[in-house]
Length: 289
Image: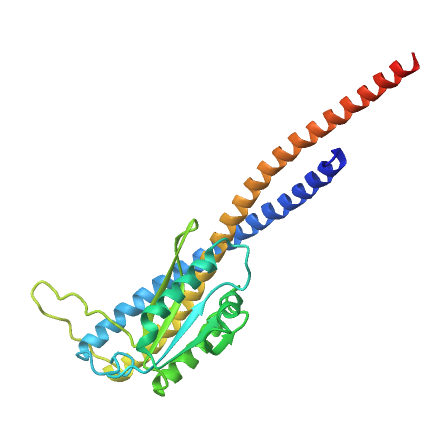
């Protein structure tokens, strides 16, 4: 049975651990605010760019641009899985990996070859022995940078335009709030642009384009693709910090409960030790009579 000193040592260890979890919670909260601001700006830019691309595509009568036209025969596909590099963020990565596995079971048979690319070590280490890995991008999820998103996007875009793949998907966590993260798998190539809503009288505005609609649409779609990847990386970073903040808050509360329990057990052990000493003193006194 543990003694008074054992409980003291355990209590000191728990308090040290609690200081760590509190610090990690505060650090994640600070990073979360920065990540949310960056994500919000990126989302606004992507929405504005999407509307412009839709208008240009409408003016060009949704021409058969390679980035808009679905391939007739889908044989090869690729999916970019974005997770965190580190753990200690609850079920944040686990839920996404389960989502990707379910998607593989449902959509995998459509492809003759399905290759994976990864941003984040958690996803890479989970899938590296189970799937065909094309690329593992290291050190891009902790602090997303547009230059990194541009590098990833160019590799994927070149592969798609070179007809190595007929469809490209992306898997990441969407974070509507710091307390909730929803894993999603969505197709990013070819694009699925929606047609702008017609005006009341059915007319549409004609614009003068420089360069021509076809060239302008191609530039817009490339920029939209790169910024969608960057937005997904920022979304993943915000979700990771929110999940870690929540996990560390729960850990801190659990340690509080363990500290209370350990304190109670320590007091009982001390009381038991005092009682035993009194019994021994009384027994010794009686023996001397």
